[in-house]
Length: 628
Image (cartoon, rainbow, N blue to C red):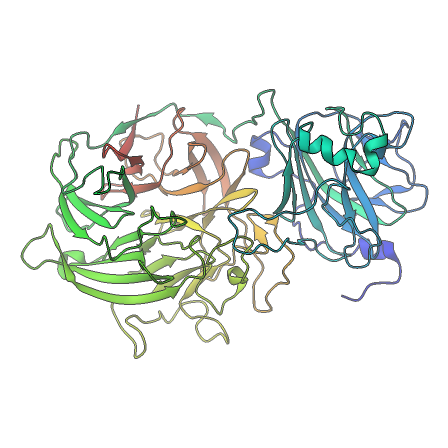
């Protein structure tokens, strides 16, 4: 980028990150976030040990800009102890600033009491302490589980907006730069005290120990701008409000309390517990009123859709052919997808998505029902439709679903590890990080499938024509709404945000330049990538940490759920009902469905539009429905 000669002019270039400035999202409004800067005034701020803000700070184009000499450090009127702070900054070429917390107005400058997260131009800046580092105390680390052990510099260049997230909680503090976790720490513990003792701050009594204080933006003599400054305070117990409009106060009940799983044993040959772990529950639409349930271990059962049903039939056993998800690092692998052909009644075909047991790849295959027994599949009938190389064991995706157009949709993650190391999310030249759409009823000369002529990237140079939408990180379950044909995706986030997507043809959903509607990393945009689309809903990692995508409820049995998208968070056990007007792109409500915490693996649906939730159970009690 060519920089203008005047640093301030650089800071006032058109925004490149946020589309709506200094406003809270629907989720943020519901979950306790507030604005510390309204984009128009300096209300709520004052200079350190002063009553107002100096003329050196200006509000220009929705940003709080340090614009001239003598501006001085500014701080919030309020004091905060446990909180989260999210803001965007834009630093000038060679510039330096900082964000301090727990600042106390004492005899010296604010940095003598409040720890500082560095803000600077990492390319031409003069300080060896880089942007996002907790000055002389903490710098970026890499999780032990990550394959790539190189520390990440996630900052964007001078003149571009960066997003900084800071969590100060007595039990767990964290700093993220552009969505990438840099480090975690705990105020006041031995490690904290030891690091201070080795820093230049050791000689200042009370540094980093106030436990409460102002948030301060530093004037370090360089041009800098801040905007979208948002704060959320933790409750005394360290929690935050749920992003809900109310509670439906329903309960869960076993949908088939007497059901026995044919040939399933809760303990394996080695004596280890082998719980029933269902990934899919679907129907064949063949008039038989049967359901089909798929286990991550590789079994598929069928049984009558009757609350009094007792017997099931092992329809297909793929154990041995499918990666054992219980082996180390394989919890996102196994049998991950099952879809019955729309014309199953006539052709007896169904499709599965599974992880190869020994090679790093995923497989989409077609099987046929037995010619002699409708409750058995023919294990010898497999036809491999597609093989997808997987660079890592996580983010393999796996849910598959037939759309109302009769084509098969396949949801693929970005390939795994963290930070999308290969840039697959925005690369149309790879299948990874995408929703695919293929015709399994007609093979072309090179594949056991063909490409629908109206796929959005057909004929685009360098793009895979199978891709229907892209910018996906880790799609944990997809579902079509039978009423309007919309495709819903629950996309698992990395550090900060989980999201719900309603897929549009050709849509780019941002990963790995964005996580939800928020900045992520600093990778340059792909030249053929379109402007990212917003998720219809998102929630942050103080609410939940791993979304389980669900289904739109289309049964009349519980009218309070009808037309709403049911989804969950696997880590916190929350289950919600999202009422979203897709036609008008408008959120109506998000409600808590049940008060209890339930670890939901997936959701299923029957031919009547009833939605079930699936759990892990060593007793085989894995299929539940909602009840009053």
